[in-house]
Length: 427
Image (cartoon, rainbow, N blue to C red):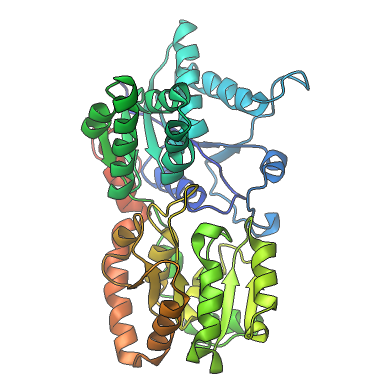
């Protein structure tokens, strides 16, 4: 195969609030630095994302992509007589066009369902045309692929649905998972399918699935201007070290309900606020809970924070709390926000050792039990009382750990599987 010059990434991209949306951006930007001349993100029309109910960033706060990165949002194919699948047909059709134009291409899909499934379908069609196809595929599995699709299909006895996802995954040239935990989850779920139906998915997954941690752009988090941190915080009515921060999706699995109860019970509320940043399906419910809390006047919800502001909020917090807990529909398979917080500095990280969070934290966070507001209260009080020199030392160790997730390092490790020689600028 000729050296690829095009990278195609299929993902739920901006404005979706999702760490893997950010990861796709980071890999796209790094691909330009590594010599790819045509980088495309193929995703969904904004109106479809809105109607799906996904948590979205304000459109005017989405940072632009660099020149050379094209975001494509294929229009649906068909009319009302096609009750579903119209948008997926648009994505598959566009991929077929990109796969058959003769340009050496790497195609990376994030989320097996529906993106890797779409790639498998597009490749089948591309090969059937008789046109030249010069494509290498990488499929990256995240936790919800298993918990929300494969595991659910197994629980409901729907062999065909589970087999569809697993076979599409294994049909790719390279299979990766976002953490060791996710890899183990995939193998375990595949083994359940095998035990019921006599298939051999688990052995294939065990042999072929590698690990590729999410790619984070460390640059915005490093060497922040101190005066700018103070200015950004002041614009929000905040001061450095005056607040406890949560920044993620407002979903039940993120443990925000426990955080509100924990903050309410903490002694830290005497001198700190709780700032909850994000959007999500439980936002109205959590706002109502906070409004009824004894600490209601000290709890702020921010739903308009863009990517550019996020590092400053992280750098200025007294503590960062993500009390994530495993639920049937979602398990935290890495914890991108934790790694971002460690890059930014700021106060200590408080979280739960569930899913792949331990891999993200690397021993540099305060681990508490899930579903335990009292433990959250104690951890917050300990964090805000920590001497400044200890906070700085902890932050330095945490940052050194988190730098392994920088997008350049992650990109180079992932593409070492694909490129015939090391990726270099202008290669």
